Image 1 (cartoon, one colour):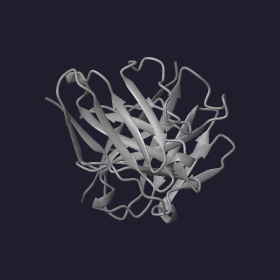
Image 2 (cartoon, each protein chain N blue to C red):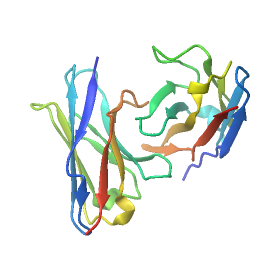
Image 3 (cartoon, helix red, strand yellow):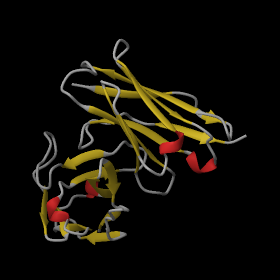
Image 4 (cartoon, rainbow over the protein chains, first blue to last red):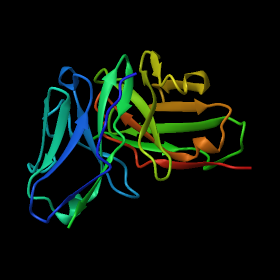
Length: 106
Length: 116
């Protein structure tokens, strides 16, 4: 089975840049999607197909995918960006999620 | 704008079958050639994909749950349904329905507790 590895937690100072990684074997060959999950709320898609932002998602959210690592970048992190973030891919007609990363904005 | 709403019993007894419905509004469930998925999140844990169903009835299930899962679509009611049999406490979770290969939008979720 295909595995995705995310750091358990990432901290960033208010207004600085946060980078959340998602590691997988040759992940560059897959489309990576990212979700934001806040307590008591449904997940929200923030990046699809590696680097595309859905309408309504702020420009400070961006994504990249190269080699064995996909990265979600939040430029100018705000207090409201505190959440868990999950990466997701498809593998053999099944979904794989990373374990999730808790983002703390200091 | 398409909206999704999950519904069903909030409490299910162990060994019984969990049954949930997702009602789609703001658009036809048959339009756009989308797959519709069910996911869940136990408290304090990560997201888990349960499976997906196409409007034709074609399904794909998470291999770890495949033996217990049944999904279907009722296009006349604009609804999809999930049945999970032989539930245990490990199936206690928030359950979500969503659309597409990248999941968007999502329903607000419904909490299902498995307990006697």
